[in-house]
Image (cartoon, rainbow, N blue to C red; front, side, top):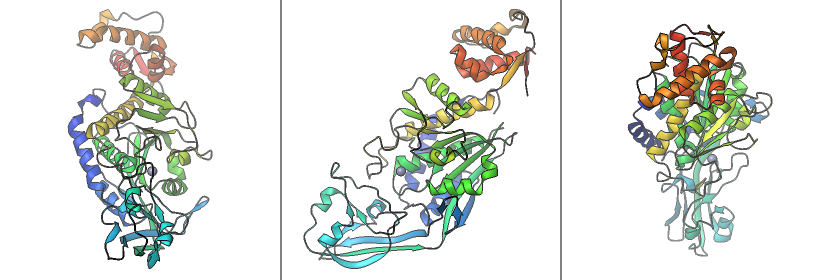
Length: 437
Ligand code: ZN
């Protein structure tokens, strides 16, 4: 990433529309933690970025877990006595509990009711339910529809298979000048849920596409994995790569209109933690920075004590804290192109920050060098910028004693990282700074 690069150079509104279109294209696919829905999703991601897909056999031991059987589904329904589909998988894949075992039989309403899930507090919404680690079958429907079911016999059918197969995940690795890695992870295991899942997939894919065109300092590894079992599987197979991770983010829930939420890594004050706080603060958008807790998305695994990686989580509304979460209302209306674009720009800003965050040494440390003589008081064109740049030059010169990074200087001075880095670039050009190892 060249010094002249600016996040604002990205045509954000066009990008927002493209990402939204991608979310809409992925939305109908029935995904789960394994199966053809994940493969189809990764195929579509692979059109945007170079992707390597991995298939891990069912039964593979991954730390304390075992890769489960593969689940695939063709069709499913509940038919009433007249043969009408009163619950229909073709209408929405949320109608079937994910990982349901195959079933085909006639049941009474009482028996059927034991396998039905609704959301009485939102009578028109369909809940999202899974049964990954317990063999069971079930249907999800709106409370409104359930309340209209007559007391009669129903034919239930779930044309699914739960058999030995594979867990599928994919990686996009962008090699940089350093082998040290920035990991960006998103989950690909939810069916038709737009914000929880697809917003992260879209923003992550487009960030990978954008970075693939740049000259990068760090290597960037984007992973597209099913939640929990996917990150555990990836870590079990990639301990060597994990050791190279110096920054990381789990990206999830970035398409809704809520304020940005950054959840710190377990380390708490890693460069990614401080950098993300700085980026959000400087962006002057509403946001919160919260401490690590061993609950949430895949940061739970990346921050388990045996790895303790500097991996935080970047979201908008936190999972479970918005009413549409894990329901049919997490749909294409909840996610908006401009929300996706804003999230993308925040991620680009943190990449820009870590790419340029370095420690320098002032080559003229005894008293201030004469900046006017070197034309350094006019390093930038904009009049409003002059005062900020003068301050930034003085701060960088004063603090660059080989122990303070540009982020340290930005934090201490209260100046934007971008101003500090432009000042450093100008000083470097005039031989007043030198890079340390
Ligand atoms: Zn979820």
